[in-house]
Length: 189
Image (tube, rainbow, N blue to C red; front, side, top):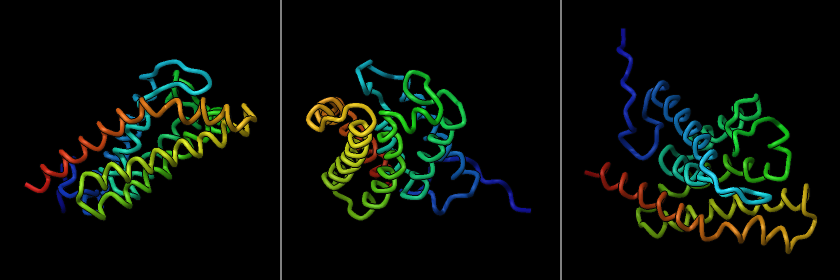
């Protein structure tokens, strides 16, 4: 009988060679971290500042395209079934189809994108550029839904749902890319 593998951080830059238990552990862990990041917020109407996107970017980079996407889909499932994982301990389908739902629905897409493109090149600027594009996916889809559901004015939607986040997300982007690059350099050794 084969022994159950220990749950350790993946040896490579994705989980595809790890056991199903390790993959499930890390997918769940990043879902939970995203839920915790949602509770760290600076109130702002109509969309609060949170740490969610930090974990979306890291999940794609650290877990790879499939598992990063799965972790964010699991996060959405947690919220859809009633667990208080969205910002302000929110939950439910109303959050997903409401004004801020476009941001949430973009999380699996962005994690997949980051997980697909980050491993293609080793340069730090590539990682930053890929994560920046992941953020653009989130804020583009989020702004579209915000405009369609609540604001109905593209100029106001772009200001309050896209541009307002630039300073905060530059900080999260820098932190996520630096943490990933540090992890990558440790794995190489």
